[in-house]
Every structure is written in structure tokens, then in C-alpha cells.
Image 1 (spheres, rainbow, N blue to C red):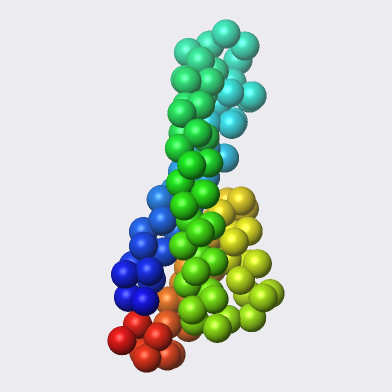
Image 2 (tube, helix red, strand yellow; image 1 turned 120 degrees about the horizontal axis):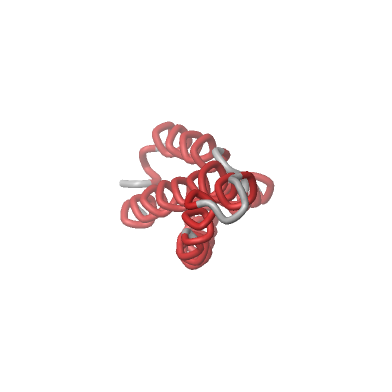
Amino acid sequence: MRKLYSAYRVLAMIVGVLLTIGTFVALPLKYLAAEGSGLQRFGEALWPLWVAHGWIYMAYLVVAFLLARRAGWSPQFTVLMLLAGTVPILIFVVERRVAREIAGHPELVA
């Protein structure tokens, strides 16, 4: 379970960072910068960021689901964990809550 939790934390951080950069940097540059400007082209050039986010998010879904089931968390909390990778910044809040849950039950990672 310790390895699963470690994998969850790493994937959550990567997914969160990619989603945040994509949402607050790439999208504004692509759609709000002057038409044909270098900034707009840079925003468009960040498309691999979205591809990476999608693939890593798939791995995150699997790991988060397995962690939630092994820890015996409620279906509502499990769904929150799974959807957190689709809302910018939310994944960081959920990851902290998961860390508190794990800290409160050390037998889960023993």
C-alpha cells in the first residue's frame, strides 16, 4: 500500500501541474493573445502538454481508484479523487486531504 500511495502522490502532482499550466498559461496565450503573435503560437505549441496530461491522468485514475478501494474510502470520496484531475487546483486540495486521511490511519501504509 505504501508504494501505491507514493505513486498516487507523484501522479497527482504531475497531473495537477500539467493541468494548471495548461489552463492558466497555454489556453490564455492561445485564445487571448493577439492573432498571429508569437505568444499565440507559443500557446498553440503547448499541445503536447495536453496529451501528456491525458495519458498521465489515465494512470492517475487507475492508481487513485486502487488506493481508494484498498483504504476503504466512501464512493463519494473516491469519485472526488477521480474527478480532481479535471478541475485546475482541486487536485492539490484533494491530495492534501488524502495525505491527512493516510496520516490519521498509519496502518494503511504500514
